[in-house]
Amino acid sequence: MSRHYLDHASTSPPRPEAVDAMVAWLRDPAGDPSRIHAEGLRARVALEQARQQVADLLGARSREVVFTSGATEAIATAVWGAAARGGHLVVPAVEHSAVREAAGALAEAGTHEVTTVGVDGLGRVDPDELLAAVRHDTTLVALQLANHEVGTVQPVAAVAAACREQGVLVLVDAAMAAGHLPIDVRTLGVDLLAVSGHKLGGPPGTGALLIRRGLRLRPLLRGGEQERARRGGLENVPALVGLGAACAALTAADGTGPTRLEVEAVTARRLTRRVLDLADRLDGVHVYGDPDHRAPQLVCLGVEGIEPQAVLLGLDRAGIAAHSGSACSSEALEPSPVLEAMGVDAHRSLRLSVGWSTTETDLDALEAALPRVLHDLRALQADDAGQRARS
Image (cartoon, rainbow, N blue to C red; front, top):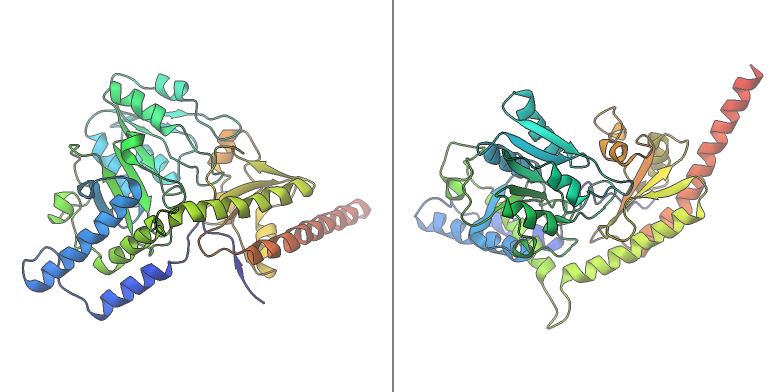
């Protein structure tokens, strides 16, 4: 049976460009990029080239890019560093757990207060409500660019502009947006922006925190002067070379034509449009998130009356990898805080996401399998209900 991978929002396979770059580096490795011998200088050149490639994707200066092990570390670094500047943080209820838990840890320690701001039924943050939560001692406002479960895009630029007037830092989790939506940190006007390598076709274990020029933060990881004293520890040069290659592939354009990112975004919207159309044809299935302002690569569906694990297992048997918007299908036996904040069923959802390697054939398989899986599960439920009524 052929497999069809529709879980790119969890992790996307490394792009061929990233794999080729890593393999070439591993076959002819150099030294520590902090050393001044020839081997170290060669590693430094490769590292700085990767830094520039990441910066080019995000509209940043290369010196603003701090390499990390992923978006989670980048977010923890940003929250920890910003926390030294004040005692209050503002966090929307739909932020990724990396943001919510980093802020929550400060609140549990008793050193900071955290104000949680709600959203509407589409997962949208009201900028006025968010800004109304800002106080005289607020040090950081967090606002993700695109939601990781329902794809809703948030009004980051408007919030950042208002926060800048009040001297409040803005942290943007762009893990679900980078490589899928065009990003220019100068246009957004944000202070801190976190990205994940494996979400855009780079290698796992890579990421970056963009720190606005002139902003100084205390480092989370100490022990060395790497990353201009902003993150201790020897850089993972082979993996970061792969991350740079993935970013360079996305910014590449054929002559004066669109970039790879722009082409892939159009393709992703076409493919997820098929998911939306499929949902319209299925009873008891509806779409979560903003239908107009959304990340192009993912769709979250509400499935009435059926536990997500059963749907995921049914699709997996049909050769399709997907995910539930609810965390109860993975590591934690809890409903989705994102869907709870939206006021929808937080226990029963299905997240389908496409990426650079997705084909129309993958969507053909979904269109054939999902109606059958739901029909069979509802038939089993009806049989169980009938047996209980007779017993």
